[in-house]
Image (cartoon, rainbow, N blue to C red):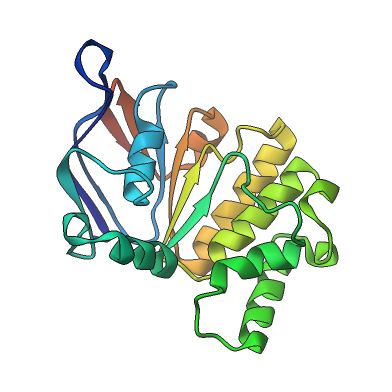
Amino acid sequence: MMLSVSQLHKTYGQGEAATYALRGIDLTFNEEEFTVLSGPSGCGKSTLLNCLGTLDSYDQGDITFYDKSFNAMNSKDQTNFRHDHLGFIFQNYNLIPVLTVYENIALAVTLKKWSKQVIHDEIMTLLQAVGLEDKVDKRPTQLSGGQQQRVAIARALVKKPALILADEPTANLDAKTSQEILDLMIKLNQERKSTFIFSTHDPMVSAVAKRIIHMKDGVVTSIEERS
């Protein structure tokens, strides 16, 4: 077991204005999974994803990563955890406009003690994998939405993370591009052996997931396992 979530609670606001985003979530995730958190807007899936990535705190419960408790981590530990083990893919890509494709990806490994040649080789391998080896010197504004998301995927994978967290990765893309991005992530999941956890309400993504965790009003309502 890679990741365990135990009795996780998260509330935004207080009193009558309180929003109960997570209500006692219990889940486990294994290595190399391709899992979807599915549900309507406001169900808690993005909040859960942010808690898994230490981008948001929670009020009660715990998360463990290979038996390392998040509750025992200070802010420096969390930063190191994100850098060493996590890759993020965001709905809005989160690329830096003034940097080239190559530089945006390289930024993710600035703290790695890798040689320049190793970094270069890994970036070029990933750019070839995502079909953007001819866009190395382009800036995000010179790319389509689908191409920007491909850069974001390469950036997430360049550190060789154990876990990829993707928040609505196809939400801003048309159906054809969404399918291409989805096929790419399935391929990279199989080749690179990283665990992928998505938050989405896109039925196209859910259709190919090995496991679908259905959420509503901050709770897990059902879990669908597929072979």
